[in-house]
Image (tube, rainbow, N blue to C red; front, side):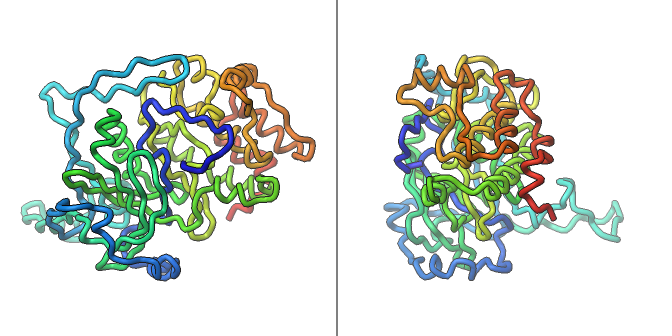
Length: 407
């Protein structure tokens, strides 16, 4: 995020597409619903049709009609991996093509309300005659920039910008993330953009930012995202006394994040970049994971890529060893410490000193932090990944139980 945080050291190898942007929130389908059009009157007032500033000249021209179903992104251009160093990691290699050289099929970005809950085929009702011809499917909608009114910028990043926007027909307020293809290609991160879209567009959880769909033109890629009026957790933290939250509020945030991570890990998704800059606050102040630029879907194997933010790197990542879902447990511990204490636990003046503190798990909990909170942090900031407290146990930890009212 472009937030000028002191001593926040970013590893970008190259940087994930979402680094440096503010993405939005409030889950649900792209349909009129309670609070959808009136939940942010100030935002609606600020909206104006300035699509030309976003699109530039001559970038529209695709048909529309139906639900979210975007065209497949152009195949990534094969690139030579940049040599890695001890201070900056190399980018992960893009997934290999299939034997016939074909790219993956375009993803289905139909809103969850239009799909059966179990992910299977929707029942045909009482009329189940196998000889009866199936009704024709409605045409899918292909989105273009002309479908949206574009408002004020919400954030600016290395590869593009995020704008407040409103779908013209339904008046549904969203955030439109605009990525520049030239910059994405120049950094060789086409595969990361593909992976981010593929992962985030299939996630449905109240504490995970929704991606409703995407489309693209000759020069840009557009991601249609939830709008989170509360902004980033990092920004909210900077406004607190001592840049730290009360323990009750910290516990609620940690519990919400645990719920989202359990959902991700059950689907074999590793986030790998949990930090306040990548967490947003929705309409009711609820926490939402909003950046999946470093995420991976790994059902069977571990990863070795060094990525993320230095203050949040786990010991196994610092050492370049294979890592699994347990890196998210370490990041959860770092986040809990930072929200409670106002700074990262391994913060130091140099990279080398931060590395050393991480490897020794050397940190100090201030005396005004309760023993229950300190105990939870100590069970997450464990050098051996196998000994970190499982997410299910974090959810029922006494510190969480004390502060979180579970309904």
